[in-house]
Length: 214
Image 1 (cartoon, rainbow, N blue to C red):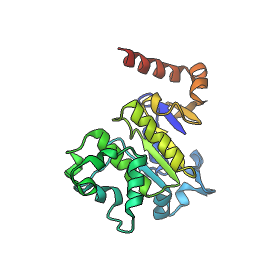
Image 2 (spheres, one colour):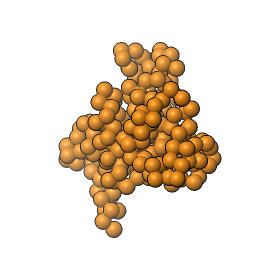
Image 3 (cartoon, rainbow, N blue to C red):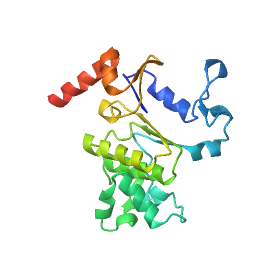
Image 4 (cartoon, rainbow, N blue to C red):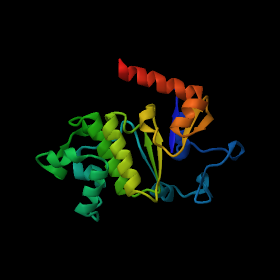
C-alpha cells in the first residue's frame, strides 16, 4: 500500500494515527487491526504487530549489531544477515569490523542512506505484521529503493507493507495507492489509473519527472 500527498495533506497525522501516537475518537471513525479497534489493543502487543521506520531513524552509539538487534542475544547470525540482505545494507559486510563496527552517536559516521538501511534491517528483525516505511528510503537512489521494497515483499509475504512517501517512485509499484489532500483520501488506485483520474497525483508525478530531467 502506498500513501502520497503534497505538503500539509495529512500524511504525518495519518502515520501518527496508524502508530498509536494519536488516538482516534470513535465519532471520527475507527482503525481496525485483526478485528480490534487500535485504541483497545495493549500497547506492548501493538508494537509487536506494528513497526515504523522513520525518515531520520534513531541510531545509537555502539555497534552495528547492537543497533540492528537491540542487544537481543537470541538472534542468530543467519537472522541478522538475512535482515541486512533484505534491506540492502551490504555495505556492513565491507566494513573492517563488519557487524561489530562502531557507530557514533546518532550514526554520524554513516551516510543518511546507510542509517536508513540499518533502521530497516532493525525493523525486519522484529518480523512485524505491519511494516510502515515513513519516507524511510528518501536518502536512497531509486534503484536501491526499489530493490529494498521488492526484497521486503518477497520475504515478508504475510506482512502488510505501508509506504508513505513524497516520491512517487517509492510507491508507484504498490497494489493500492491512496492520495491525500487536506486530511482526506481524494483518490485511490494503481499508478497508471491515478495518472488519468487524479490531478493531484499527476501534478506530483510531472513535477518530479521534470526535476529528474533537469
